[in-house]
Length: 128
Length: 499
Image 1: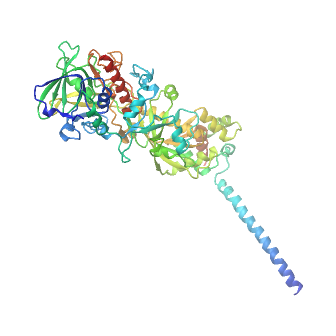
Image 2: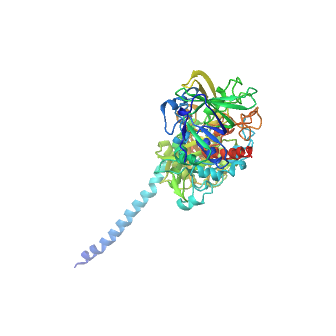
Image 3: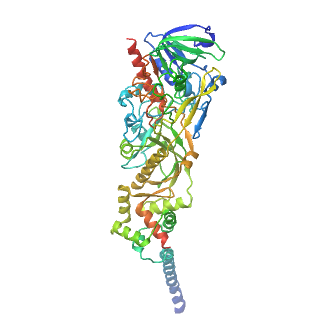
């Protein structure tokens, strides 16, 4: 058995291991990057701090289109100011809970929604 | 055991004396006859039909209509022994406490007494309609057997419960004529006379009392009955017709001095597909969608406004039922995904259910029965019904649905879509309960009611009315068990008059 053969043998598991690591890296990278890519379908905006709470942006956008269709006026900057004041750095779930407790609900195509959620969806749809 | 007698065998011109005449052999008439048993009173029940449906008798119910579409008058009730219990669905629920109260925001509302007044008759009424133990919203037996209700948290809507008249062969509720026929035959001094059509309530010349009843058969035979007391129990439509048509002494009809007879007609609107309810985890107890059996009773859940919500938000009674699983459109799927995500709940197994409803109507004097020039085979004037429903009735029910939606979101249980936004869309899905009410409404003040708190026609001390025609406000609950309870109360009152 020559040294070169031994070297070759010892390199195979090493390469396999490197390959596996690389493969996992690619898979992991894809898994990480796909949502990022999806996220990137929505252009950065001045309202991302607000929209970050919307986990399902595609769905929120679709719902937001319906919100905008029924809104007489929807001025993004004004809505954003209103939302920032209302959210005030609280988690979205807590804000929605306040909406519901205080009866701030709206109707969009018949769907009864917390007002904050409807406004966020409308904002999302407006800027995309 | 006595056999039923038949008016067709009574010689023309006969005059029959009796202590109590009961006109009509439906739920109220049969209940009253059985409740009066044991008092040694001579009771005569006059039933227009036979023991089974007969076309010519049923045709006596035909009439005309104006206003919004409504059920044909000849098909929304049945004219033979047992009356409309022969086609009822067996859905049973006591009226709410607030149904009896005067609601300041609701014109013409309120009974002359609180629910407490008839509550003591509920157990016996429950037995008459064969609904098992009186459980309803004391829900433990239901939830112990079938699991917890939908989590609605604190709010204006709660899970309430129907019970059902006993189902023989799994489908039929109690048909009073069949079920109690043998019992009626066993009552001493009770005569049940079939094919006996009362065509006139004959007032004494001074109009201060009822003197006699004119009775006719479809074959043309005529005779009279002279009762000490008479109870009109022919249903919410026919009670008014007979009072209005009996106009030989009082030109506007009996008990109609204030033009109230036939007014305030009501039914329970039953719109279908009023809303779509999504449950995020897809799980609801079986008793929402289908009748279940527990504790020896049949029951089904419904969603009702609380007394507090009704009062504070000025909404009428309603009983919302969960119906079929339905698909969601693209917007609906987006609404569910976006909302569940924002609420931090998993909606991957979400299911959507269509909702139906039984609604209470606001009292409306223009929703009324009047006589026409057309005559039936007995020569009695036929009726015309002017049917109405106000937009505010729909709007009020919509407020209840919206509150249900709020509660579902607040508990992160689900969400709701309101499927009816315009009057036309409501009317398009409208069905009716066949619950005829209100046309001889009860009030202590003769200017506001046809009968007093004892169901006596104002001004005529020996004429009473039984059945849901005396309901001045209606609630959302199905009337049968409630009118049976009210009839038991009337029976007690009548017994007192003979002591």
